[in-house]
Length: 473
Image 1 (cartoon, helix red, strand yellow):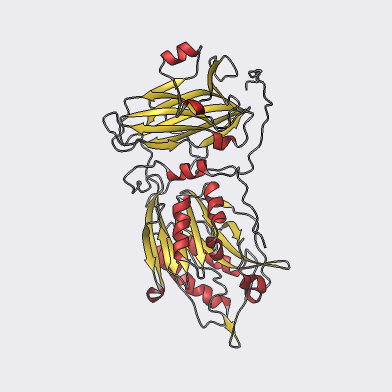
Image 2: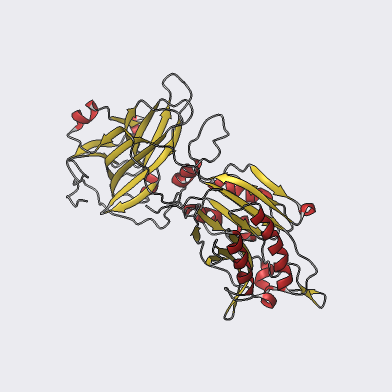
């Protein structure tokens, strides 16, 4: 098993004056679309456009003004400034029409199917609310001899500098692709203006494989009189995961609670809650260090007067590097006096970025969406009991791997399309379910019409601008 360590990688000219009020609205929710990797080495340059000298020159270079209908057509222009690099930028103005949707577009040939391409561009937006929804770049891969629609990739946002927002990413040209249309959009913004500049497309080396062996415990202790006994049953499963070469293993929910009873009564969270770090995390840390693997486990945590249902992440050295407190608490836990968490943290490992949910969290779309927005590529789910269909849905709707460890529900591993990669039921306990996942080469779209990167599409098309009304009582 090989492991790879991830590396983390206006001009203030006066803008054009229009008869509209320009304003900047900060977006409250920023969608993060994956770990920030160092940019791949530049290869064969397909397109570089950072100097623009008037409409006639731009159109002679192959740039087209595109809109679906004349009624939706924005105003296109080429401006001397603001700009990046050389003089000029490609501009689009909403023309006081909230229905507009159009793009500057240029077709680039010489695309090799299966090869990887790095695309980058930058835009400066003015007078646009929710710019991440209304200003975007798209790559439309096609084959001139094929009448089927092409596969489209939305380009995620990177960093911003002095008002300019960079977008970019590395994309794999789909099967059959021979050309790609670079499309720079302004959509549904009546008083908005956007300037596009610094546009590059280059063929780059294929990224290395990024394989992680995930494991999940299928274990349910019973008839124990102490937390330590139940935890030790999980530790035996951790030993098995270590022998199988897992990079990370997920244990169940409340591992210091499940199966523990006293005087014929099942223990409750306040009875067994412990500090973090504490005895359970120290024991798990020993095994993580021994097998050089990450461990995720949920347990009852006590901090001062508060009791939480908390999942910890322990690294290969046996150290706690993060924890997540369950946000959605069922009535049974609230009745025991547990307190909810209030955030959805994500965690960086040496193979990628991950997130954690606990049980009842999986019944709601927000936790998985928040983790995916934060860049999680795999979500781990210690779960007592629940709905396997909803767990699978969380994988599909966020295009992430989901790894669950259950008691009253099967233990499952789902891929980004909701395909079951591994499963174990109560009859197969105790044991470990494993799957090898290549995070750089996820499974391709199973549909007859290729959709490109669904994760990018979902995040781009999410309508955060529409308020969800509160339920009426």
